[in-house]
Image (cartoon, rainbow, N blue to C red; front, side, top):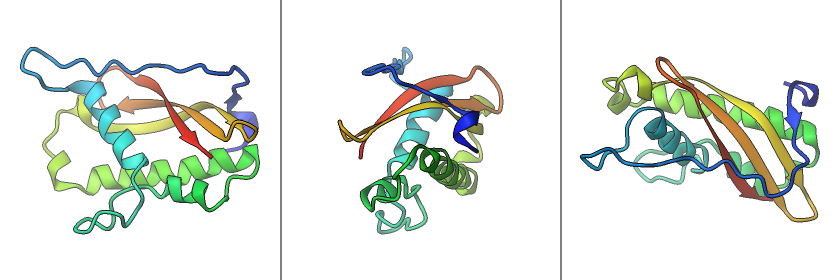
Length: 143
């Protein structure tokens, strides 16, 4: 993935909220549950969970260690982290019985804003489940 494949955002403070509204029973379902799970795994450092060392993506570690220095680094490192999250989701026995609306087909980095002056990276991510509607949301990260 190159920067020409992405819509690089120059709009400041544009956040796409995700509606994490629960159903009548107080449960999060469908693409919103998928988004919540994906965000949690994406922002979890690999090896940080004692009994699940393979869980997470390592994306925050990439940022903390200064490996995002230019625009081209964002797309590449997102792809690596998103692929790791996808492996986490497919290898977890608990996700095998989930409805297809809560199972990931693929994750796409639609755009991002990398602002070193404000120490900020904002990712606009689109998740497409195996079945059902896609969901798009922002993931703000300090750099």
